[in-house]
Length: 208
Image (cartoon, rainbow, N blue to C red; front, side, top):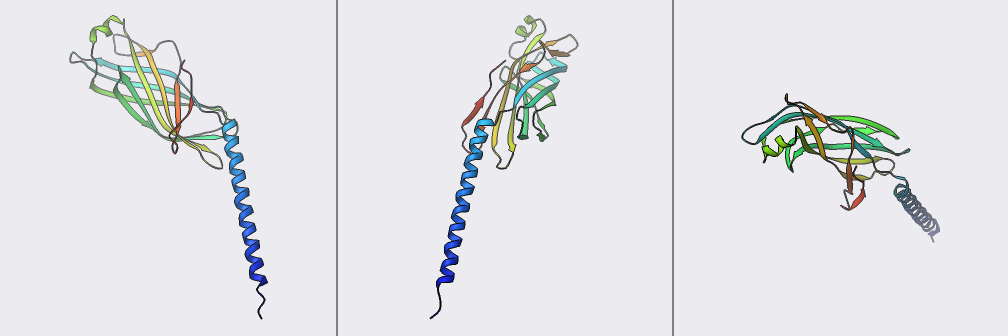
């Protein structure tokens, strides 16, 4: 009679190995999630500089101009790189989008500060509702800048967020020649992010 102990023993050993491997992998993943939750710091954002040229407001309530917006990206993490893509920047006036552009993806190293310039052009967008209010503002016009992006952690198991950066109430002092700069120097932005899979708020930042 054939001995059946060998295949039975092999199957039992294979079962034990698989079970232990799954348990070990699950334990490592759990530790990783806890570690990320405790030590992962969200990126921070400032607007360092805004310049406007060729700003024109027509008698038909249309606005056009060229914008250069310098963002400062900060990665405060000492062990986690961040990858940004699908980056879109929008300039708005009174909740009306007047210019938008896309930025190239990039990887940001640990404890790193990176300045990225967004160049935008508006071609006669019909959004200026009250020219008199602009005239009374003594050449200071308030714009809003919004940036959306996808952010991924560059670690063993990547985490992805959908990021929204709100830089509102940016006051631009515009001269007679249609050129202007940001009033008051650099500005901190408020950002929020949600998990791509869970669609739940992950973190918020305080406004400046």
